[in-house]
Length: 173
Ligand SMILES: Cc1cc2nc3c(=O)[nH]c(=O)nc-3n(C[C@H](O)[C@H](O)[C@H](O)COP(=O)(O)O)c2cc1C
Image (cartoon, rainbow, N blue to C red):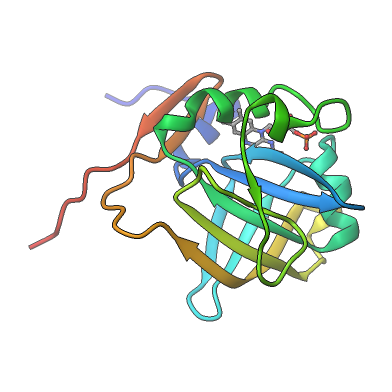
């Protein structure tokens, strides 16, 4: 028997893509923020939707610069991922505080995060849903993935400090 789920908890069932770290840059200063709410929209060029709350410093930066990098961490970075979501770049240099290493990207000013196994350089291609939904539609203009990484143990957010661990591949017959 199914029981009623409060509408306020629906997000705990659907927000299951990997948690990513959004890195951004404004006037030469870097910031970093975890988000769970992303979605693929098209294959090629790869178009992605990212929901970046307007209370965040990242929102202010990317609304201005129209670019950022989506970095994908594994469970090894769980402390940093959670920690970066508790502090704002308005007050803290999170790269420094969480010992993360920015490295130059090829097509955007925002940096790649060295410790993440994959990084996607993105440019905003549609601003129509920013004001209503905080939804940035971006095109991935360059993509990087660490050589030899198989079945990475990605983090999938449930709520608060709770995550589901990715990494087990199954193949349908
Ligand atoms: C696991 C996790 C997932 C999060 N997902 C989102 C999200 O999808 N969208 C969002 O706006 N904030 C999300 N947050 C909250 C932001 O990361 C948080 O507000 C952050 O401090 C903003 O940083 P900034 O002010 O430096 O940009 C998440 C936090 C955590 C820990």
